[in-house]
Length: 78
Image 1 (cartoon, rainbow, N blue to C red):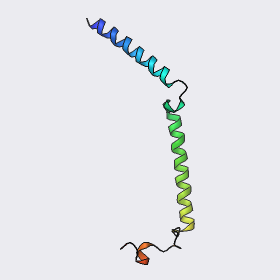
Image 2: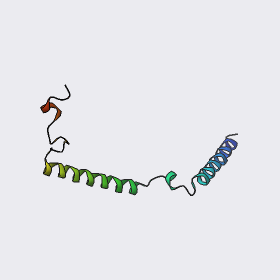
Image 3: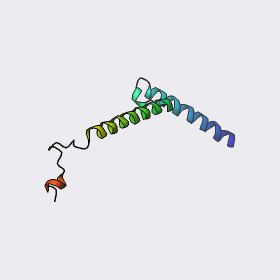
Image 4: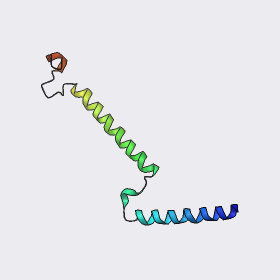
């Protein structure tokens, strides 16, 4: 009895795997990412974050479009 249940499970799993393979063929967006791809993207994000932080420290925090005045200093926002 348990052999029959196991055989039915194997057949069902094989069929499901085949259907998923056929459905995702020619669709690279449905392809799972590898750990190497995720690691490479994390390194890029860290590099961009570091570059942004370095830019902010060299320029100061006067990047506001109103000439650097914060809303608290101008009385706005209250």
